[in-house]
Image 1 (cartoon, rainbow, N blue to C red):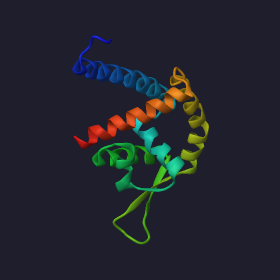
Image 2: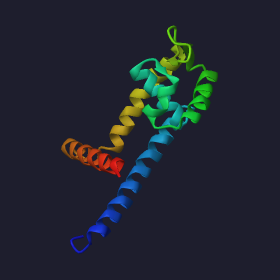
Image 3: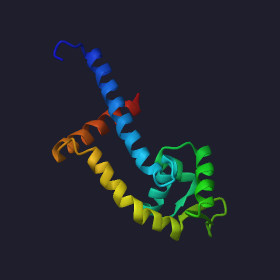
Length: 147
């Protein structure tokens, strides 16, 4: 690869990064779908499971989802009995999403297996390589945000 220009290397990195991300994400989505959830529903439940009650207005930012889609996803999860809406006692403009006992039970069951699957998907790298990748990808993402 020494013969590649700087632009060629950038394009090559973009393609390799996109393909790796797509492959890993596809595997993770298939794992989630086995439990009757889509990727977004799982992301909302995982957020509530690990971070507790969340204002509906902030969920989209935290899981990188458009605010219009949040209402739809929360509605679906509420219909399935995995969460409830709870009005804020101090500010009626704010509504919280709260994981239900059924939702917590589901996550207690599936999250450890999902975590193990993610670990196996990324086990092609050593811990040191993972730390390096995290550092480099963060640096790349922060640079791209500035443009």
